[in-house]
Image (cartoon, rainbow, N blue to C red; front, top):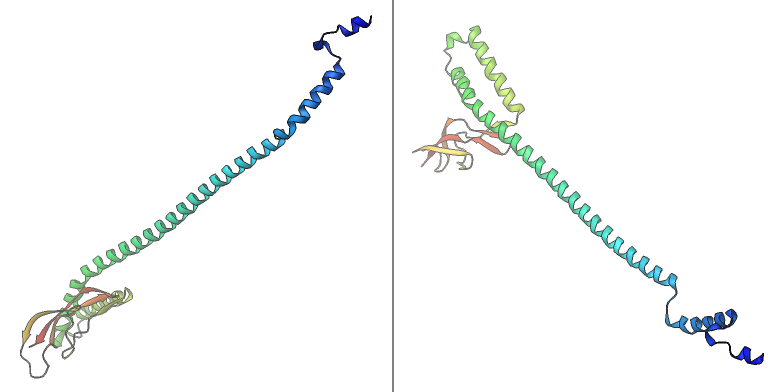
Length: 194
């Protein structure tokens, strides 16, 4: 009977012995490999880093888009203001000849017609038009005789000899000039002393 016990093949060992040998084998291998939870932590950390990088890229793109939109709005506002100013300037320039005609008509009214209702109505229209132009910041260019000639606001149509006015100064205004703010709508046309 003792022979029978000894004749048990090695691969048919008792389950307890087999479990003990397996435990010994895993204990000796454990330091060589990382625990399963640690590799999950590493992959989660890598994933978190990748997501943070992606978030930063999206945030940077959003900030750039927001800045571009702000610049677009500012540029559009400047263009709108410039278009409005340009349209106003065009309309005001078209009104200047009307103003000139009304002023000439008022200047040459015969003395006997100054109390005429029709003449007074025309003069009222001239005053009203000038009031509207002033409300739109239109002013006249200073071109009084004796004032200095400024080529940015004056246009010399002729030069003449003058003993009363020194050379390079205005002798008379031939046509009134106008400004709209800092923009010259029409230069004053003048005669200049030689």
